[in-house]
Image 1 (cartoon, rainbow, N blue to C red):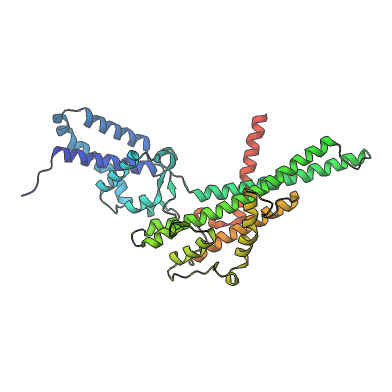
Image 2: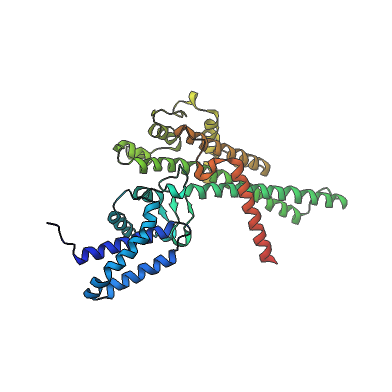
Length: 374
């Protein structure tokens, strides 16, 4: 004898399909999100405001329409879990106060619910990569993308102010020479000094920002491995991937080695940091000098690395560290994933690509500023 489906169960099933359509319409590019939102609103209003008899009468036809609409998505994105489970979990995001329509939905959650091959996301998309919803659909991002853009933007500004310093200084020298003067007056001296401060300030910030990017990137790689494998990792491995050992923070240097051992199939570290003799030269320079310089720039002490340098020295350090940081991050990635040539979701850490993009952003902003002045 078959169990008869109650009216409430039929209503619930309709709600599952409505919620599913909302999910799909939220993140799939070119979907008619506004139309789906209207259908969801009208369906919910109908269920809330209609009599039991009206619901019984119209629900079967409404269900047919929703199933037909859903089938277009189900065909392209086959489910990995039951529709009921997916929609109930999705609704929990709102109960927990997650502002997913503002900050996006984690790729890992979506990937666990359905097959996403049709959307052609990056093959190495991290599970905590955020997929834009609603007005932001078709877009996505991750924190280390912000950090690397910040770092390159600041590096471009340091270079810009150095070029301004040299151009302005040369013109002033030429003007003063024509006047038969060998020194600048106090006002001109002050102007040049102000630009020198800008060069040094942005150079220091470049070093701080690139260090932050490398640290954030290493943490992100570890977190992604944790999210993808949390069902098979033991407690000690989970703790390490969260950046702890026996309840205490582990350093960036230790993470670089430990994460390789956890991520690689052979469980071996190719970049050794625990033995100084085996440590690659780039890693030595990163930690022996630039980590100390970054620490001095962050919280200076006379006992730390000196930050009293000429603007050109600061700029040279900033440029060298920007290149070094990108190399270190890429070497770490390839050590973890030897079959990869770089993380595609952040431009394979191509230094020249990121620098060119930062320069283009600076040019676009300059045009906006010029329009405002005019």
